[in-house]
Length: 417
Image (cartoon, rainbow, N blue to C red):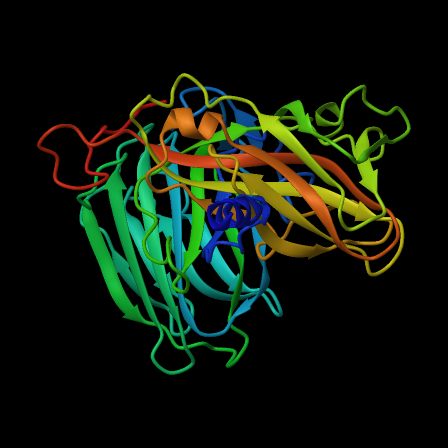
């Protein structure tokens, strides 16, 4: 009898969602959404010429972000849910330039305080083809000693210690997925010129009216808290998974033209979310939709190191004060809840950097990820909670070859365009 009671208790515990993993990956985007607008990942698609999702030789996956080739500014932005006023922020991006010597200096990365657009740091491609790290607080700089090669993927990683008194900037850049930097620039001292304002707005592309195309891929933002992804992101490739089946569904299919299935109502990405045309809706706090996910693409090797799964959604409420949670199930069927999302009444809104769900996939294989599922459950409020799309950005890298120098130690070289 005692054994039966213990067995029942164990089974009951398996059905209770785990608390959210303590993650500090703030943002993950490989442009696999095939939508470079505020409809999916970006705060705004600003500049004289829109950034587009190109398909020619991306660093990974099917798509990359391309700026305009004409002499116009062309960039995308992502704002954090709140300003970072202390601690360290790490930014990674892969960049390739169509010209080794642009006609004018091009800022590839700009990090600002969104309150008054004070520039904290910039990474600039100079007319010489060299990189420059720029500290906005006092205009100090550090330049690379060698020029970049055109049409070659470089990984740029940036560390920003946010402080009004002891701030620092450091840049490391690599050829492709190498784990040995070509060069390290800095650290530079960087005191906040607007004390207490912190860091919020991240911009990628070209801020100047200069001819030539800048291509971007596999962008990540970390901070230094939490239990994983709390330092330099390192090499990574990003694949997208989306709903492809109803595992167990209890929400109502809704919209102007409801889908035939629950997964069909929330599976428009890659592409453009259709918002009010198809979505799933529920007014309670206990009904759950669990949806199976599409398999990782063939590019992801069977022995790949799976770094993390980053789950995004777009939601709306039918009244004020409605809240839901994202939920992921791993390959064993164990559920884990993400942060709560306070829904916006009457407006479709993408999950912020504090609302998405990051799952630590350490030790998980490609086959295990293919068995994951994703969904959502109400948290509070008695009115309509709506989900119109969801997708999961999975970061991965090829496994280390025999005799390699580290967990991710593999040099792929600079994949050209």
